[in-house]
Amino acid sequence: MYLHLGGDIIVNDKDIIGIFDIENTSIGKSTKDFLSRAQKENKVINVSFEMPKSYIVCEKDGGILVYISQISVSTLRKRAFADSPVLAKN
Image (cartoon, rainbow, N blue to C red; front, side, top):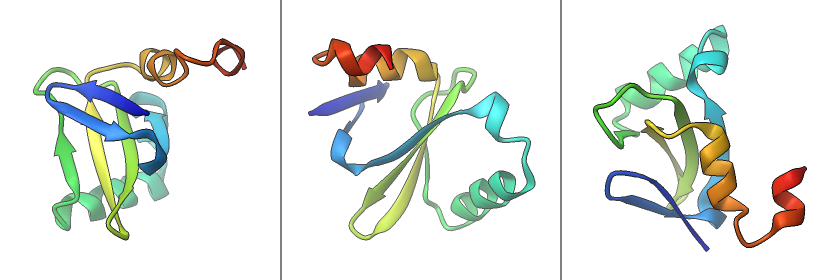
């Protein structure tokens, strides 16, 4: 299954490592370091120029890609589990 992250970006859900709220998780030092390193290595893709709400960490060709999205974590989760109502409630 594929997940639409916004804009023209669609990723295979099997490649997704995690979906994170940018406001709540980016305040920690280790997360800041991770995102900064990914940015320096050109591994960050901005899905939109709107206010970011989430970031999605994916594995691609043995490496890591980070997508910055204007879509909230709750909306992405609903999209990811749309075909599985049992999982969407957990």
